Length: 412
Ligand SMILES: O=C(O)C1=C[C@@H](OP(=O)(O)O)[C@@H](O)[C@H](O)C1
Ligand SMILES: C=C(OP(=O)(O)O)C(=O)O
Image 1 (cartoon, rainbow, N blue to C red):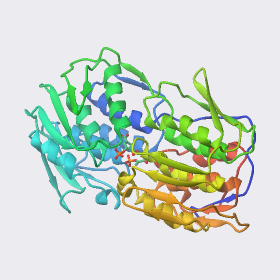
Image 2: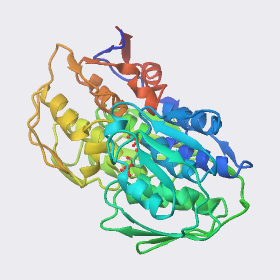
Image 3: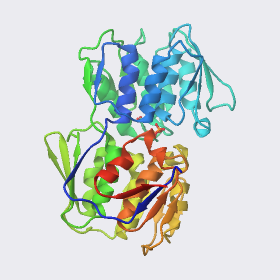
Image 4: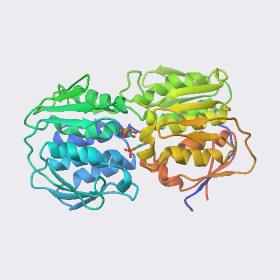
């Protein structure tokens, strides 16, 4: 009932899609809005993860347990926020998978600052119990190689602490563009945060000097249209709004990466036109995606569709996302006859495949990006996508938007 049959079909040319705001930017701003109520957010994300965040913040003090379901950013960002609410007692829980996603590094860092957070089931994992306190500490050091979300979480509360917060990052820093996004969001609101070498400093800031923020649309969501263009005939194009050249989102690197596949990006006003201009210029792609882990699934599926082999590296965080994405990709790509190898931080596609007439069934593992990354292969062959509503975690309109551009999307 929740599955979707995508019949092999072709895109209508010259369509336009408006993608909702970035969920990463939105969830940062929602947290900041709870600290600075005058803040106005425009073009906010309509994702489930942002709804979860909004609801959790609205029920502050009214509910003794907050369920964040699958939303990693909500889980991590709310932990710090609740921890500094004096007098609050709350449990944060999530989906079964959320209870397998580690949170110890963040909790240890917060407890160094004097917070009171404990585990209700397994040490190091949600659900956690938070007793909100006024905290005195102003220096913390944190391992930076597991998830940048822990660091963003600390950064977001920094400006509301009475002492300047100084965060020292230890080890190799992962997903750096997301830390820089947080920094830029803070700075653009007038918080004089700085990030030099491995030290982040956030000064106490009573009032924002700029209190409106326009969220750019979500580049990770745009990746699925890049993939569709890469797999289309030459001269096919689509317009996507609202995007800008000086994006805060690391996934904007898509525009550069997809040039390898013959896809050209043109920025006009606040939109992009993406166009298939030539055949792919490469037979093999080697790419380190440490800075853009969320588009790894899109890229490897594009490679499969184009018959290009690839080696994607820098992906150790994929094992602790909505599912173990490296294993999930291997399982599903092999259904097409692909030869796929994985290590703890990389995935290789070693051959090209021949597409079939019968639909291939794609399992999605409670992971929105598994569903959306495979969908563009509809240009090559029919597919059945299991548990299709999973896309609402980041992109609730995904299936409707595919229909709108001419693809055959059928609810089973
Ligand atoms: O801060 C953010 O908004 C995010 C950071 C990244 O997580 P990691 O830092 O855990 O890789 C990314 O994968 C996630 O989708 C969103
Ligand atoms: C990893 C993701 O989200 P989160 O970690 O916030 O659950 C994602 O959207 O791909």
